Image 1: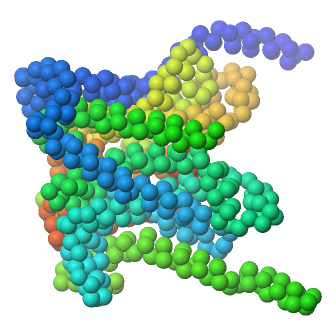
Image 2: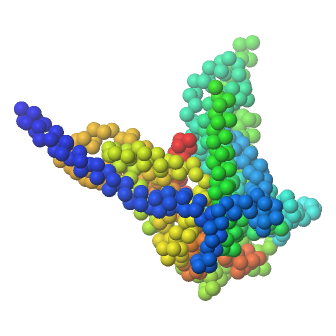
Image 3: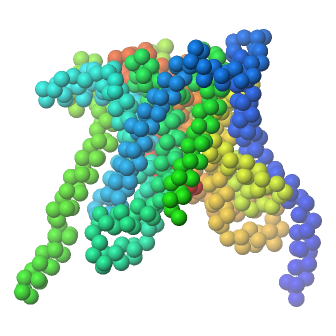
Length: 309
Length: 289
């Protein structure tokens, strides 16, 4: 009886509180929403806006509206931005070609290797993932020192009687150095993602196919790879985006050199906007690159996702 | 025939626990990979503890180990490494606590409190996950400078709080908790805030720890944004400061590796002790896709 009596006031307080709950919800999200609006929502539109002005940070009194001129400059071979911008775009493209295949394929192989059952497995997992805990600045400085003229790799080359290599000075070696550094630093990240996905594949699939006489390589091709499709698309896409954001490694290891041949698009945007104060032009570059990356992301999911059916 | 078969099976079962050729090959590969991932770090430590005249030699153990590189960078008034260390710790701690508080509240609300517009707002948050981060760089720099936050710590800390990943992660977590827990507290007359802070938050301690470790390391290792916002030397964090250290001691790799060591050791310690949480959080990132 007592419980029934109690049920009555509970439901009424629940309905009156319903209005208050509405406000409560907003209060809970408010702190994040304010910061989100200021630094992720607003800058989306503000960036588009700035890109329409000749926006010199140091000359607040002179900021003429130039319409699409900043974008037109990026497409006009005679503008001062054209060469630098497209060289940087090409450099970023080159780095994608260098870095994405090893970051995806090596990560997958490492994940398969670490998915077995043997002693010390957790130790190896920890070691391979460890560099990811570091700042890219530390990774880049360590590898700059490895690849330096008097560094360890050239010292060993000399001891083996091999000629010296200007790893950070002669193209294309700086890309190799930057790629090795990047793979060392982040391949563990992709490995963990693949490993998690591998552990979700039901073991019964492998049992059934080995009873049918399939060998490990056949199993990898006919079971593992198809089961990893969704994760594969995710890893390829995030790796492409991460590689397109390359900044610290060339900043530290080569300063974009030699002759700006390792200057990626992020370093160019930084140079144009922050160092040379041409923020309108720099914002236009950002918008253009972001649009391309967004397109690539969508394309990835469309193309790689479609062949599933 | 039968005896051959038995010897074959016993041999196989024994070798499974001892040495199969394929297992030896496996360990050789694992060992070589270990060298690739560990040796650069060993080399960093070795160089940092070498005296100047030994730095260019290829010995892996310093013959005369010394602290002189560390005392060198810590005593150079033009490169306030001790100050960078304090800045890095302070910024990472404040950032992590703030983002945990803000994300826990928002994550809980998006998961469990019904209010008009909830799904629309959350959809807007998710939309930014696919937007390339570089397009926010220049406009945010202008916003921060207009607010007068260049060379101020809030200029480094606050923009990062906008990040959506933690909200998304904690929302998933709160959605996975059984509703009965809250309802029981509600019937006892608890307010939403009490339910959140007394019932839900304690249950989320594991998820909060995972997110906390990830965010702490993100803040500690961040380079580009602190480089933009903190140009004054005494205000810098370790990674941004390290980059200027390189300008100072271009080829003095003993000192450069000492600086790298100071930056690397705290996160490596955190990594060794809390790697379970870090691996979990990375695995979570994958589930997002």
